[in-house]
View (cartoon, rainbow, N blue to C red):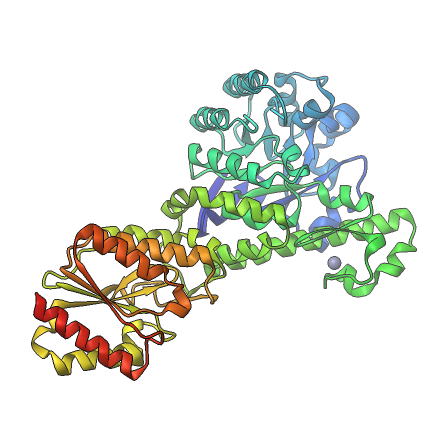
Length: 541
Ligand SMILES: [Zn+2]
C-alpha cells in the first residue's frame, strides 16, 4: 500500500492511495456494506456512483457468511472488484459488550477472505466511561497491535492501527504515539461515533487534533463512523483522509434525508434542495407515496450522492486554497459545528505550522473566526521577526484603504507626496505603516507580501477583529524603537480602540504620540494638519 500527498490546504490533503486492488484518491468515503441488507448493491456503487472502495464488517461476515466468503473471497462474495476495507467487530464490541471472536481469529479471517485493508480487533473506549476503563482500552489495543506481527501471515494487506482514548486527551496522545511507532499503513480514530451522535463536535476537534499531533503525518487517518457530509469539511481540514458512511443507509431507513448542512425528515420536505439524479427526477410527495423499500433505496442513493458531492467540493477547495472558507461556511450551517470551529482556533499554531505557505489566490475573511487562519497567524510570526528600517525615527500609522497594496492608494500617495514636498530631506526618518484588518500593523515594505494585499474581509469589522488589530498595533509599537509616533485616526471604523492601543504602547515606551483630530482621515484639512504634525514632530527630534 502506498500513500502519496498531491495537494494540501490547512491539514487537509488530496492524496493518492493504493491497495492491492487499485488506486484511489483521498479524501475518500467508504460506503458501509452490510452483506445482509443492501439498499444499493456494491456493483451499482461502482458503476453508477464511481465508488472505488467500500467497507464491510469482518465480524458480521464471519458470523453469518463465513463459509461462502472464505470460499469465494470477499471481492467475489460482494461482487466488487475495487478496494475493500474491513472493520473487525470493534463497533459490535462497543454496542453489545463482548464479541464471539478473538484478536487472532479476526486477523486470520481477514487474511482468508482476502480483504485489502484490515483492522485489528481493538477495544473501543466509548463515551462516558471512567478514566480507568479508558486506560485499559488503550493499553489492551496497543497490546493487540503489537501482537499483529506474529498473528498475520500475509504482507499485501494494509493494516489499520486504531487510536483509542475517547475524551481523555492524554490517553489519545499516548495511544497515537504508541500506534505510530508500529508498522501500520493507516491509522484510525476509534469510537468517535457516540461523540458525533450527540453532536459533540468540539470534543471531536480535540480528539482529532490530539491524534494528529502524535501520529506520523505521512500515514492516512481514518475517522471511524463519520458519515455525515455536514462535518466532512472540518474533519478534512483537521487532517482526516478517510471516512466510512453507514449513515447513508441508516438515515434512509429512518426516512431521513442528508444535506450539506444537516438532516431533514422526508415527511417535512416540500422540495428537494439538491440536484442529484434522484432529486432531479422526483419530488418529496412522490417519494413519500412509494413502497418502503423503494423509498429507502432512493433516499440512500440521494444520501450517498450528497456525501460524494460534498467531498468533491472539499477537494476543489483544497486545490483552490479555500478550505478554511469552505469549513467556515459549513460551520454556520449548525450551531454545534460553529462551536467546534471555535475550538479549532485553540490549535491555530499547529495548523499554521503544517499548512502550505503558497496559495494560488486571495483569501476571504468573514468574521473574527477567520483570524485563526494560518495566513493571519503566520503574518504575526513574520512581524515579530521584522526589523524596522535603521533610519526610521517616526512611526506614521495610516488607516487601511480600499485599494491594495495600501501604499499604491490615492490616499496614501497624497500624504507621501505632501511629506516629500514639505520635508524632502527628512523623508527617510519617517516609517509609513498601515493598520489594517486582519493583520494589524503592515509596514510599507510588507505591503505586497502574500496575502496582505490578496484578501477581502467583511466590514464593518466585528468587535473581536477591532480588538485584535488594536492589540497587534500595541504589540508592534512596544517591540520597536521609534522616537515618536503619529497616528492618522479613523474613529468611525475603529471605535477609538486603535487610539487607546497607541496611547498605551507609547506611554510604556515613553515616546510621544501625535494624533489627527478630525473624524474623517482623508479630508484635505486633516491631511494638511497631519503633515504639519509630522513636520513639528521631526523638528523635536
Ligand atoms: Zn439529491
